[in-house]
Amino acid sequence: MSTDMSHVMNTYGRLPIALSHGVGCRVWDTEGRRYLDALGGIAVNTLGHAHPKLVAALQAQVGQMIHCSNYYQSPLQEQLAAKLCELSGLDAVFFCNSGLEANEAALKIARKVGHDRGIDRPEVMVFEKAFHGRSIATLSATANPKVQAGFGPLVEGFVRVPLNDLEAVRQAIASHPQLTAIFLETIQGEGGVVPARIEFLQGLRALCDEHNLLLMLDEVQCGIGRTGKWFAHQWAGIQPDVMPLAKGLGSGVPIGAVVVGPKAKTILGPGNHGTTFGGNALAMRAGITTLEVMQAEGLMAHAAEVGGHLSASLARELAGVAGVKEIRGQGLMLGIELDRPCGVILTRAMEAGLLASVTADTVVRMVPPLILSRDEADEIVSLLVPIIKTFLAEPRA
Image (cartoon, rainbow, N blue to C red; front, side, top):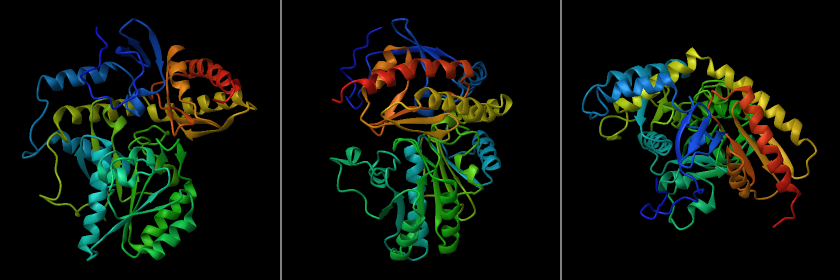
């Protein structure tokens, strides 16, 4: 099979392999080389590759219907929405195709609630190191100058403060009377696997209640069982008003969702928002089956247990290594922060038979399928630790 990519726009720094198939947490390239997948399509392949129950469900659905317009009622949409509401304690769901679209819908809700209250120029609080997408609006909510460069002017209406600084939030609320919402990732992914602290999330919930603001928690990367609970904010014992989801919800089939509570349930009506492909039958079947398999196989508890084992093993093997700043994250969303840019580790890991990623320039990120076994976690450690040690022992570039 040709690996020529000359007709595809050059928007990614691709590695020089082409993956052909996978089973469980293993994938193979077109040359027959095998890799352990610690990236999971960037937190997408919840059930791993070729899970038999997902394959059977998708094959059956393709034989029935892949897509129909949202002009018509969709029992599959209602089934998946009802399950997401049951798991989250929220009230209603809008389905779309991606995390970007889910975040766009959340921002439209924040704008619309402001206009409904008579605020002409509503504002949304966002956070340093945030990443919410690459559309013009979500790019404006994002805090990465590298991905913003060349796309100005950005959308106005965002107030940015440091993460985990409740006093900064209070000051921003006091000085921005047009705020309608606070919007953040429960665990920042592209920002370097940086969790919002439990007491910070609880404080945000209290401030939103006090000042009649929407609390909007982006769970696109950290949701769907990745941390050991259905949604990462549940560790703080709170509920958001708006929760964008995507990535792991479809185990590889593109899907996005915005789950809302009573404060946001009726903000958007017919004509205010929509989608052509969102909520199509194939994506709904993927979401329904993903959640069913997760429950049947106990994958949340498994993610917490194996993730804890992986984190502890990495901490043990990297203890005292000069250049290792921190190992952080929760469940099977982990990052190893180094004291220097480490993009070369991506290639070296691939050459050793391990797929991982580097984010925020200095953080080695692992978001493997939730079916990862303890033995496979040990294999990640055995492959990755020598690469990190060798890299850190080299002279700085």
